[in-house]
Image 1 (cartoon, rainbow, N blue to C red):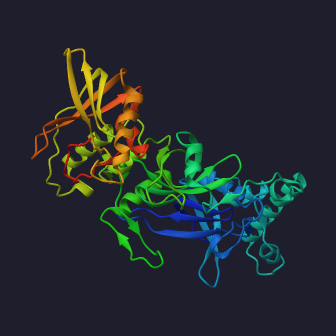
Image 2 (image 1 turned 60 degrees about the vertical axis):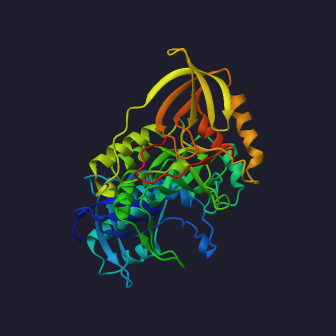
Length: 450
């Protein structure tokens, strides 16, 4: 037998093919190699570009393999190569080279079958004894699966849910149906550290979508896209690798929160990934791999105040994307107090009664802009924004967090800007989500925001 080697499984491509990662050196992503499992064949997953549909039980075979080895450290041996250079071998998920052989487990459970090539090899006089022993064990496992009618040998298998790689549904209706719910999902691809392809496991189908993490933006990584120039921003590959080792092909929960403007037709959504390892968006920001993204932060439940704190700390450390940062990193602590809304001044300004001070206080909602009366396309929404706030919070208790003070400028008087929540609903985010306000854009070194 060839030399036994160690590696980490990056992902399972199908029920009989995986991608392995070697050891990382420095901050560069480690080398990768694709390995087919020797002497077995699982049902083929389809290919939308080639107009090929999934074979029956192909996803079930891939999932059987993925759940057991994705992200795990394994031992493997290369047994043979094709003339084109593709490698085939055995993978072991434990120290026992018989009981822990992943190929035998797949065949035994009816997730794959022994190839004709392997059967023919047994009849050759020059067959290696070690290889012959492996093929015999695979054939024994297949016979057990056949007799028990497991997996592909079941004459009446349960119908599989379809795997939908393209998004042909009405995105707005899809979001309305699933918004805010925790959906079971698998991270199938990490495009960059803040953009993923995930497969939602819905009752009637496995639906692929593109998910942008709410509230953050990592450096772009775009390579090998037909008709588009390659773009790899500084720290992009390192950020993506660190997300891959934590999330790729892992079972997660996804909470859909919104859709990026202009992308409603291609299955792109904004949301949060919930994983036992923690909040990946918060980790990206605290590790200086991502910035807070104002346009998507409005979708976050509870607002982006915690992300802002993490970003300020990251800026102060001046690592990775903040190396060389010269902007302001300090900010006075936020002041939070309870109050009652007593007047709606406009679509972005309210007056509250602060009982502790026994005073009325006026605040502008942080980081948003109400519809402009001077713009004919927006003027009609000005009163709607004001009325929406009135219905939501007039006369009700709220929590006010003062974010910053805006000094007087030209014809504008000084303002205190705050994040205000009524029964957990962020007033600013409520207006943006309902199309009644826009998100202000800030410089990267401007800490005055919600």
